[in-house]
Image 1 (cartoon, helix red, strand yellow):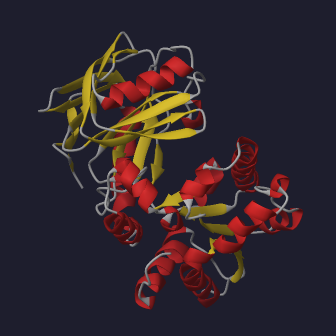
Image 2 (cartoon, rainbow, N blue to C red):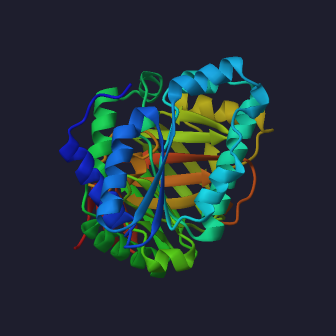
Length: 375
């Protein structure tokens, strides 16, 4: 289970999410879904929504009962969602998902058929949110576990503390920085990443619209279909010209590799590109993990996919959110069509994270040795 957290911290989190992030207004319907481990946080979210004159509805899954049913109930029901739950979601103006379950080891041991149903349900959830324009937030405190902390090589206590602290950041500063970074990435052409560790990589921008995850879903986001936000937030990203890429990036922070539906931690490593292709893998553990994934897919070749700049000043070690640490530069390679790019295959993509690096757009510094340039 999770530690007990002070009521004042839970209410501050709820205020930032409900008021600043989702901008919930009087008379709106807010659906809050939680697992038992995060129920106190869900209660605080509901209180904050009610204080604004909104109508909160709380749905709770009990973890112990879930696993008891999984062991003794009809297996074909696991992962299925009833029509009444879909109806509640479709009727909501805002949706908050305190994700679970916490026992990820048991989840990963589910039979393949059950795991596929769970994955299909998650895809349908995203489709419904997008179709109905439901302003949505997901928070992963209820997914933190000793298993994943060991897997990503982080302190479980520090991970949980950062998930909370970074979710309390006032989004106003990230909005300003995110807009400024997005403007340069939208108008720029040539991009260069450098670092004293040997990183020197040149990419080309494709004049595509960047996406800014700044901790707020406003009217413009809704119009553009950007209605789903993971908190803590804080990153500006854009897909690049997939056919261009020359040089080397030496990632110095943990990244992640997604191969089909598998999520694989990726240690720091050295990666070289030529003529728009990844031509040399790291010779250590990171390269072996990516190489194994490529072999399982028939050895496809990989191109640059997306570049991003982190905005959140309170993120440094959160698994899967490393890219959102302020000043962190991240290169995504492989499949990027889900990000607005053109690479559809293979069903594989990876993130290389660089802390303390520099990023220039058309020879103008945007990030200088890990620090955002300008205000």
